[in-house]
Image 1 (cartoon, rainbow, N blue to C red):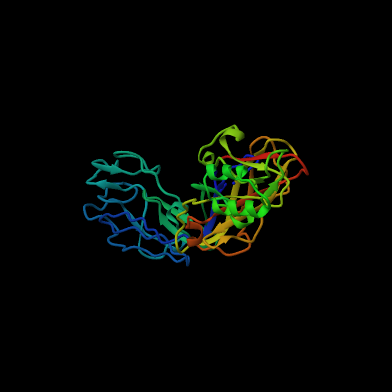
Image 2: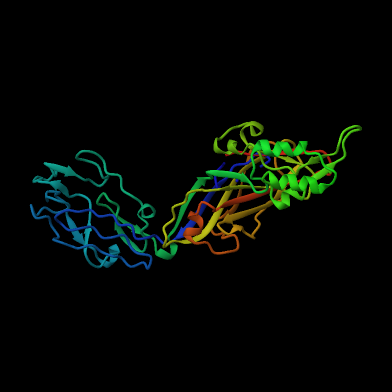
Length: 361
C-alpha cells in the first residue's frame, strides 16, 4: 500500500521511534576472554569475563600485533569502562610472531587484513548505550547515555489495505447499483447483506428512475483498486487505490495496516511517523477528512489530518513525528501487531459533481 510513510493518490509508510536499547550481546571470543556485553537500559555496563589480559600463545602487545588471539587491555574510567577486558585493534589472531602480525588474521585500525575486511556495527545496531562496547571488529565504540538513546524502526510498507465501509467483493458492491427500491430501507438491507457496514449502508440513496423505470439504489462510495497499493507506480489513476468523491456525509476510510514491525519488548515507544503519498484528479476537490492510527482495539481518537488540499501530482505528506505519540502511549506489542496501521478519509470540497482521490506507494 505504501509505506506507514499513507488517497487523491497516496502512499502508506510507517515508522516508529523508541528508546531502550535492549540487551542484545555481541561476543568476541578468544583466549584473552570474552568481550563485554552491550549495556542494559539502566546505562550500566554488563562486562564479560576478563580472562587473561594476553593470549596464551604469546605475549605480544597491541603495538607489535604478535600475540595469538586479540590483545586485550583493561578499561579505565576515561574509556568508559572500569572492569573486565576491553578488546582493541592491532592484535593478530592465529600464531603470528613478527611485528606485522604474520601467520594469522590481522586486524588493523581500519578493520582490514587477513581473509577480508571486518565491518563493525554501530551503537544503534548493537542497541547499546551508556558506555563503551566492542563493535564486533575489535574497535571500541563510545555509546551515548541511555536517556539519549533513541532508535528508529522502519519505515515499513503496509502489507494490507481495505475499505472500512465495505468488506464484500467488487462484484457484490457493483450489484448494489442494480437493486430496485421503493425506499432507502431496501437499499440498506441489500447493502448489509453484501458486506457493507451500518454507517456505509445507511448513507445509501433510493434514486427515482426514468419514466417506465423503477427506482434503484445508489450506494455510498468506497475505496477500490486496493491491490494497487502493493506496488509503486507513477500514474495514480492506474496504480493507486481510488475513491470517487461525492457530496455525501459518509466518507469511507482507507485502512492500511500489517506493517510488520519487530520492536524489542523492553523498548519504550517515543513517536510514530506516517508518510502518505496522495493525489486527486483535479485541484480543489479533495482535502483530508481524518488521519488516525489503528490498533487491535480499532481506530484511535487522535486526528492528525492536514488542511492542505490534495495536488494533482503524487505528493508525500508526513503526519506525526519521532516525538509524537498521537495522544496516547503505545507498547511494542501495540506497534508490532498486524492491526497497527493508519485510517485515512478524504472530504470532497465541492457541492455538486464528483472527483477522484488516489493513494499509491
